[in-house]
Image 1 (tube, each protein chain N blue to C red):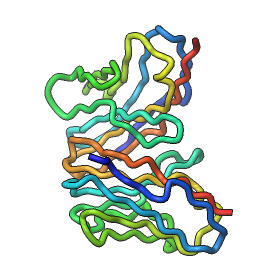
Image 2 (image 1 turned 120 degrees about the vertical axis):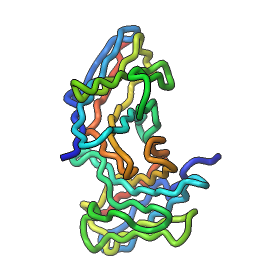
Image 3 (image 1 turned 90 degrees about the horizontal axis):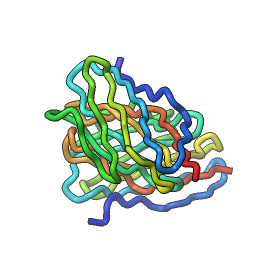
Length: 113
Length: 112
């Protein structure tokens, strides 16, 4: 099992550009989570999906952020337009049952200049 | 409100010494409790979990944690710390909804 796969590992972009982060969850996991980690705010849950359906997007900071899960093996988090304050590490995690915990990907470090 | 408190932001221990990292939670139902470790530049790795049964749970890398319902605590322990244990540790609580709430983390430094 390759684990949760995120791409790219690092992304540097200019303010105003569109950024797309990608995640492939573990096969058979039916829940997927997007987190953002910063020094100031720690780990923040942005959105999560059950069976490809968005369940809770209350953590999405604003309309510039959107997430999709077109099938069980792929999800994207898009920021358009990006701003310097979006600079953070974005993690994707997947899970199969509530008491099993999450498996995290290695994260995407986003820098917006 | 559901929450997790890790009161220690930063802890330094000597190699070979024992370790206890504190975690207190607030959760309206029977909680599922987790400890994760994050090494620099890496994602979070699950150390151990509790959801029922024996309140003392064993995890990977020689860690254990004890669930104390009366104190709403789930402290992480290790009898002898190794230099490779230096990392950030996160406590998390969840329930049947499969949504975890994470604490703010405790950064562990290990002195030689």
